[in-house]
Length: 219
Image (tube, rainbow, N blue to C red):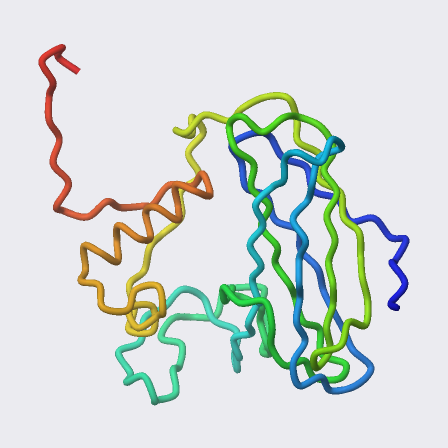
């Protein structure tokens, strides 16, 4: 039976908030399928648990440093910078997209980031919650880790008062992503806006199809 690791991972969040637990994993051999099974954190009285969502961080190969630039090359063509290099990056593999899955292959000596979102509700009792991470290599449990979540005794509002603005860029690869399959432009934007709202961030643009109405009370 795998021994529980004594290291304690921690997450802190308010009520009505989502915060990530970020882990980096390396293996001493190639693993065809590493599975991350997360047991939702439970409160001290055992009556309430927190929602969890696991993500598998993918790498983007970058062959040259570049600043913000645009390319009209086809999807299968090599993209080359069209603006002067003015960033502090370097060529190599960069972790960026987070796939909504909990398993994948891991190469020996290559760091695999894991992203675990923990979510509280408005009525989640404050206190410490305890969960467990079970690591499975090719179907067999090889390790278990305990993690703690501290829920603070205050609630975040649904509408953020401090805007954090992130750009939305629509590209062919994004349009073909699983969550957007079969959706038209309005459907893709609505899906993205809901994700932004969940993460308490604001899109840089709402598009040109937003309509504003004044109610009977003048608001």
